[in-house]
Length: 275
Image 1 (cartoon, helix red, strand yellow):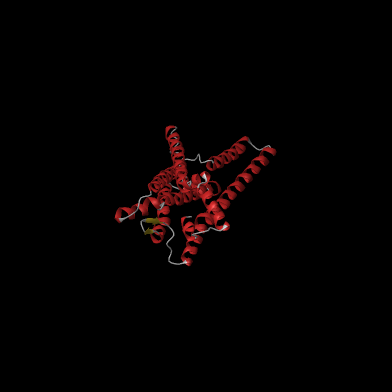
Image 2 (cartoon, rainbow, N blue to C red):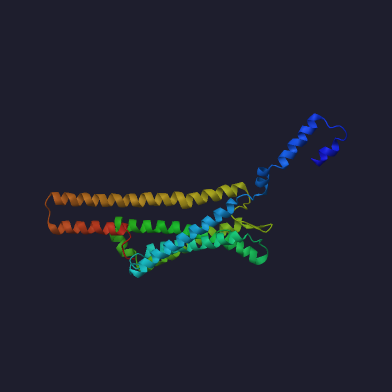
């Protein structure tokens, strides 16, 4: 506005005078002043706080489930369920730690900054827990499938040491799947942690996405559909056999045997079988 005043010395035209009056009105408008001085809403910070709250709720929920299983002395009968809740508990804990670290918005430098990026800010532990949780769910599904569909074989080969080795595998497999990928595609750039974005080429980026979707969505979904589909088929067939025996007036001992097999299948599906 000052520039306009000095650019037009002497007699000021009507058009330039109108422009100056409009500029004065805009400059002195209290509503516009309030809009320009008010700080914008930081949705990124709101999102990070929301994730922290979700992590706290998940940690408390999984902790209460584990506590209830131990207090009721059911943890030995539900070893795979305990393992699943433990993985989810650790994942929720690191979710809190990772997003709490992001809220501080620290400029990352040196060795400490590098490892803070590689461990917490990159969400490495969170993704590790998520991968292990998905693998654990697939393991539970396969174990119940073997208990129901191949009951005799599972009693012979599914020993206690083997089941605990599988539980250890669920923890290790998540780290094997996530950590090398994270180190390959993450680094600090200008004091900022860039995680899972620094690919050598677009081909590597697309290949990584396809591998992730296929490994942790497609394959897992196929396992769920196949195993639980077969379990439902076996239980329905067993129920039909029981109904036919009852209709034919078979002996009470045979009916009781079929009833026991049917109850065993239901117990396995609901996770009440001891490991």
